Image (tube, rainbow, N blue to C red):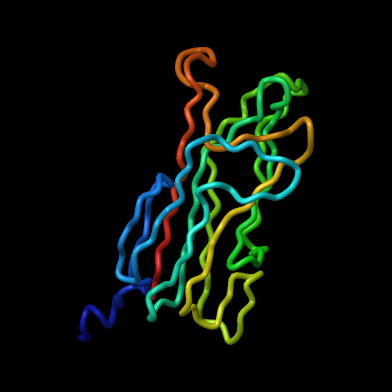
Length: 199
């Protein structure tokens, strides 16, 4: 009879080399590949119909030399723009690596549309996440493939509204802040970045 490991081999898995995670409050975090400083979000951000950088999403990262895959996840709070033009808070979010859009990571966000532009119920925690493959023969950043990654590269998120003046979104904020009404101070919510490098 053979060994149990011959009959029941261990499943294939990724080996995590490092995890870089933090809130966009200006903190610096040290991992094996270096020290990284996160952005500092101190206010909500109102989107427009032109793509703009999402505050707190940008980080310039160099993975460990032996990394084959890099996962980037950015989570943030989204809300309808305001009680007059909120509707469903439709917006589009795109991921960029060193200025090139990663088409495979594109996302669109919307809430329930009731037919009344005075409703403001689209209030969610959103995220955009992608795994870059560093084992390709040549760079194809639009599809998230690279022939290695040995120098610092900026990862960031850009976003825009679906249209104006309706269907607009605001991010990094809550409108429903406790109880049955929109009462109390508006609070901005700082987004989070998590990067994991795998072998």
